[in-house]
Amino acid sequence: MSAHIARMGSPPSSTERVSPRLQLLLFAAIGVIVLIAALRVRVCWSNDRYLDHTAGAWTALATDLKDGVFYRPLFGPDGYGGTRYFPLYFVLYALLMKLGVGVLLSGYLLSATGIIALLAGTFYLLKKLGVEPWLAVCGAGATLASYSLQLSLLSTRADGLASALDVWGLAACAHSKPSHSRILLASILFALAWSAKLTTVFGFAAAFLWLLFAGSSTMAWVLAAETACGCLVVAGAMAIDSQGRIWGILKACATGGASPLLMASGPWHMLNVAFREDPGLLLFSFLALLALTRKTLRNLPALFFIMTIAVTAMIFGTPGANFNHLLDVQVAAVILFTACLANKDASIPKGLGVYALALATLLAAVPVAHKLKIEDRLLAPHRFEKAIALIGDTRKPILAENPLLPVLAGQRPYVMDPFMLRVLREHQPSLAQPLLDGLRHQNFSAVVLFMRDPRTDEGQTWYEHEHFGPGFLPALNSSYRLAFIVNGQFVYLQNADAPQESVTNK
Image: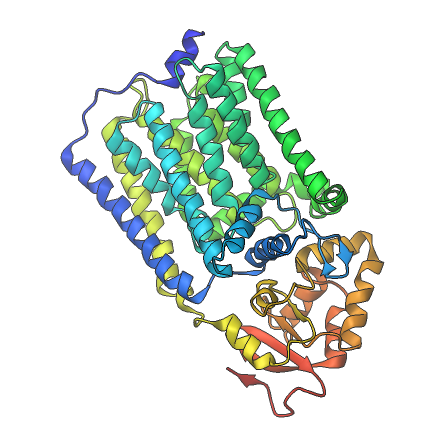
């Protein structure tokens, strides 16, 4: 086994002592961010603040599976399918619901489990990289300072679960003498990470390159072969269980309508979204860049960070990519910087690095705390249930921009993903006809929108170019009337059933 692997799997630990005051400062900073995260869970799990249409799509996939449908077709008896989400998360989600756990609680518990597993995996990986236990605990806690990571905790999304499996896969590889059994375990974890989220390939890429550059090409290719076999098993199961539908769905949906020009703008888009939505991430990314050295190609955390940045930039070159994808960048940045502090050859003095990590965590806590104070409390609890109560008669399907609402009404959502429906229409214009005809013939008991006010110019642009697509609002307004506005949800009822007085805010 190459000496390089021994050196980088367990880097020479720094003997520099950190003063108790600095340790206390870092622990205090981590305590602040953990407290904020806990308070946000308490608030947001009670009012479902971040259960948007993306979270609703995950829930809809899970409820379809619970009822025996694995990846519904692009259009069929139940309405519109079409999603690029991979199955592990919603399979587990469906299993929890089969066991009798409630719809919303199942999603929240699964997301929380993913984040806890991610924190535990980060701690374990840092320990394997030679980081002292107290600093590894703080490094794991610092990942929570990212708004994108907290979003996965507050919503029903696969990002946290996929990242956790990726990090545990790296931890399985990060050993002074990685045996075949460890490589096999890593390949299983990497394949599972991919099965949770299509784009989660940076952990495998980093491990493969690290083994290759460290002089263990045999182990590198064994990892590649076994991971590929695991991915083929996943793909085969998806094909069999969906009766082959998955290939057509992925062909139509995977890129989201990306073009070469959009792909080239991915890095700029990623920076723009991070600056606007998750500024704390930029602090940790800057620290990670300071930790890069000329030995990057033989440094597992450095390769992980670089691969994550590269893949994430590509993701942001596709339409519909949002800041939830920044979660992996935060995790990789914290791992790289914290591991650097444990290396006696690091260019950053350990005491200064601990202070920088504490300061970055405290500064990142400011915008997250602002969200707790203002944005998290914008919506009242039970908003979906209130909208359903106002609709009343639900014998006909409810057409909702957020598929979670019809799920809670006991229905199968007619539209799985309004963004993807608009994308699909660009190549199959006729696909929209059943939807538009259904609106004109009042086949829906109600239509509920929530992303934009459809009465404004901004809203009209949104529903023309982002969700549902051309002709949607004219067809809606021809047969339905805006009757209620409930916690930001615009409830349309059929013209004959809608109140004739002015719109009521509830």
